[in-house]
Length: 79
Image 1 (cartoon, rainbow, N blue to C red):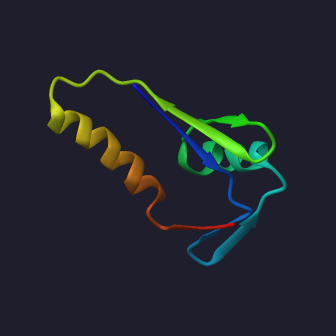
Image 2 (cartoon, one colour):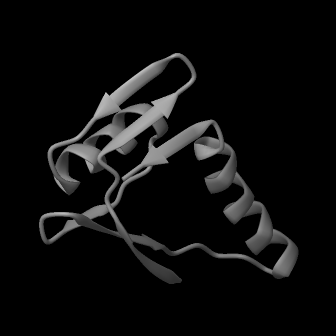
Image 3 (tube, one colour):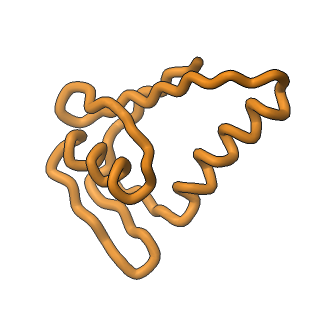
């Protein structure tokens, strides 16, 4: 299990599209809709990511985190 708090971006560039967000709730809905990543809006401008998974070894842990990276690698986050 891990938790990560981040400041919510104001914009995201994703390939040829640009998305703007008014708050962390808007951004969390974008992540859920576009990338099937669920996170919790925290206060007005922050997000909490939490991930719990069953991994038998460090290699399996790395595979889970790699999938997270692969889903978001084409995004450019703008504050």
